[in-house]
Length: 118
Image (cartoon, rainbow, N blue to C red; front, side, top):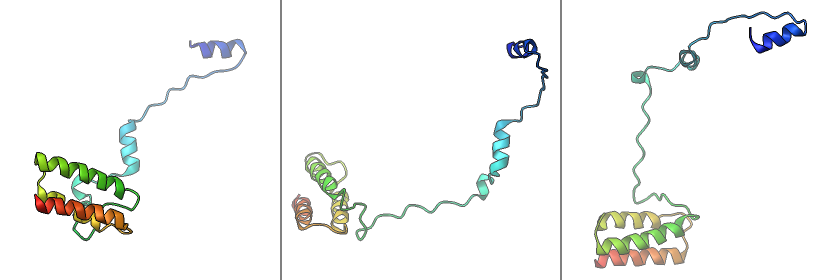
């Protein structure tokens, strides 16, 4: 007898213990979702590769991106990790950002000049 059952009996309440089978929670959720087999699922399209005409940056994060490029290019010139082609592509992408200011464009052109000179 459980405490709850004993307490209810003291109060003069009628109690019944009812046992119900517990369903397998995992299979129940899967049945409700009706998940298709993995082989029948539609494949997601691959991420579109960024080209020189698209920019991953916005006007809000472009200054931080330029600061990062300035530091990374300075470091990469002393100890090459990615190479000039990679940094050229990154700088050209940043140049394509919609709403770029003249100051930002000058900073990016300076980076291109550094890369070309190296």
